[in-house]
Each structure stands twice: as structure tokens, then as C-alpha cells.
Length: 116
Length: 112
Image (cartoon, rainbow over all chains, first blue to last red; front, side, top):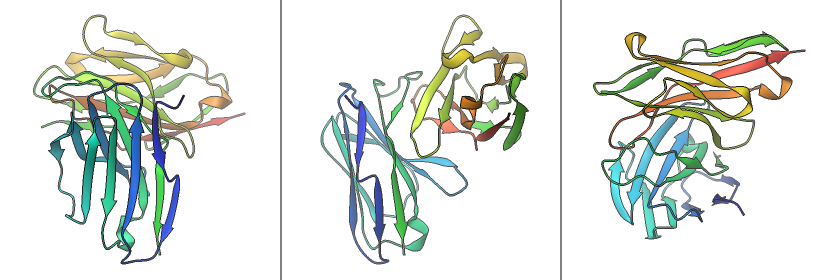
């Protein structure tokens, strides 16, 4: 069983399109995250949800909108895609509660987005 | 504010040689420290972590790291490199909010 899964694995699309990436975790965790990894491998957090509530919202264009229908799912919708959005997007989950540190984050396999 | 510095974006070692990947952090409170490994076209996998207690932490695949508060370091080592260790390695720090701050990564090449 895959602990953290993402779909699709690859996504190639044109500028201006809208796309979504889905993430599901079967670990029973309360907290989920979205990260962006750029071409230089730098990982930056974008969003974090705890029990479907947004708790981390880094400086990300408002074209990016996360949605958490339940605590096992955190989807990422991107409007009006731009060339600079090309990256690998990782979903992660952890058992951390708000204000609690030290919990391991478990990562999905990534979604490789290429905007043409 | 937290930050993580990984010295050396690329490290090459011979098979069987010592692996040493450096990580220094800045944190205003005692941190939680992690090392993750990323194999090509895969997600990140936890190697080891330090939360409290023993400062020498053992992880998977023969890796270990030592938390040195006085040096604000958490360097990753492995006595003998294998070809399968070739990957990208990330150090990360978190405090009470469980938000991770990752270093810029070190790409490890193992030379046969």
C-alpha cells in the first residue's frame, strides 16, 4: 500500500491552462503539506493543512489554491499556468499537531509539471 | 528565524570510502533535525532524525549523524560508501510548528 500517493505523476500542459494535482495519504495523519521543488532541487513549502484547516500559507501566487475535502486528501489547483510553474510538486503528511514539532514528514512520489 | 546550510552542493567519493555530508543550522530554540534522501525521480525518504536524547543518531542504510549544539551542526556520515548511495541528500530543521526548512541539498556521487 502506498502511504502518500499523488496523481498524476507527470503533467505536461500549455501556458494559461488550469490543472489540478491530487494527493491522498492512508497513514491516518492529521497534517498534510504541499512543497515545490525547483530545477535546482530546492524544496520550499507552499501550504500546510491540519484536519482540513489551513495553517501554513507561504508566499505563493493566489493562482495556487489548495483544497482539503477531508484530512486524508489535499489537492492543489493551479489557475492560469505560467512557464515558471514548471517544477516537481510534492505532497507530504505527518502526525504533527498545530504547534508540535519533531514529527517525520512522509513524502509522495512527486508530480512533475511542465508548462509549455 | 531558521535556516539550514549544506556545504557542498556536490560531493564525490570512491566506493568504500567515508561519506561526510555537512549540515549547519540556525535556530533560536533547540531544533528538531532531519536528513532525507531523494533517489532519482522519487520522493524524499527519511534517513534519520534527532529530536531529543542521544546526540548520535543512527538511521537506515548504515548512515548516522551527530547533533553538536556548540557547532550548530548535524553532519551525516557513513563509513563505507556503496554505489546505491548515489542520490540527493537534504538536511531539514523544524521547531515547534513542524514547518520544515530544507537545505539546498547535496548530490552524492559514488565512483566505482
